[in-house]
Length: 91
Image 1 (tube, rainbow, N blue to C red):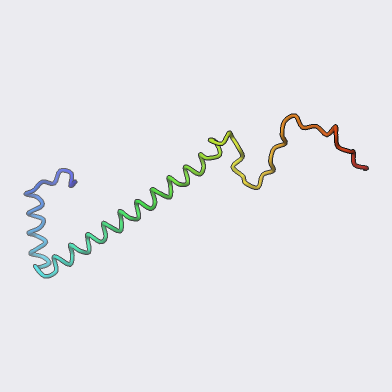
Image 2: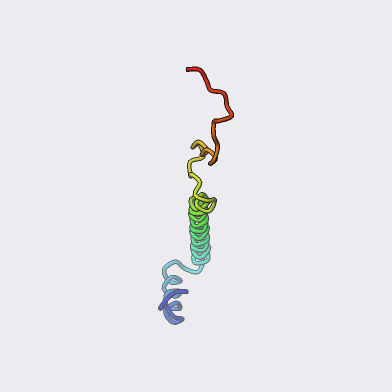
């Protein structure tokens, strides 16, 4: 979790923080750091979910057979349709 930081290094860091901030402030600092990390993880998770949703939305038209990504684009004419049975319009 901490990479190359082992037990003795963490103990030294804890003792230095205890000397600098004192025993009363140390729990408050721990809570603040914990809240900050939790908020960062939540924001990172939200960003990842949003990106995955957008990527899936972009890939969806390709899965439907190459339909246009523009929802307002006109629908293509069905193949084999002719105007033979329709009356012609006057010009």
